[in-house]
Image (tube, rainbow, N blue to C red; front, side, top):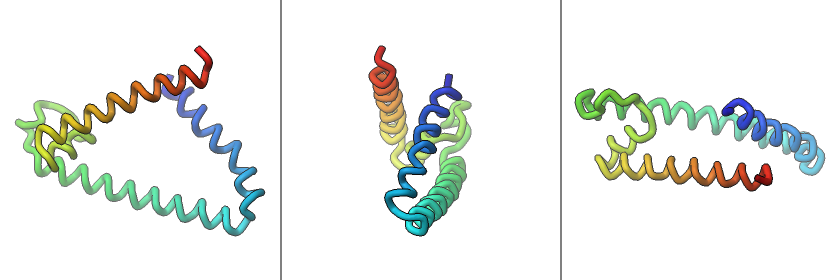
Length: 107
């Protein structure tokens, strides 16, 4: 399930944090972690603004009942081809993730 997969990825990262702090030092590693946290928060703000703007730019009748998500941003920016590109990228990403996890698990 998605919970197991996310726990696998997050758990692996948390196990490496001790090694990161050991090799880079306490002050520098803490600085990097805080800086990346701020960057992630700012990215979240930008994505939220982008989704709100995309919902304004693409009327409800063009959305055909679809939710406001990443393909809608592509449609707002580049029309049909933008939506198709974002959707295609997500499909390729999902297939690559499935292959990665199958190789990782050895099946």
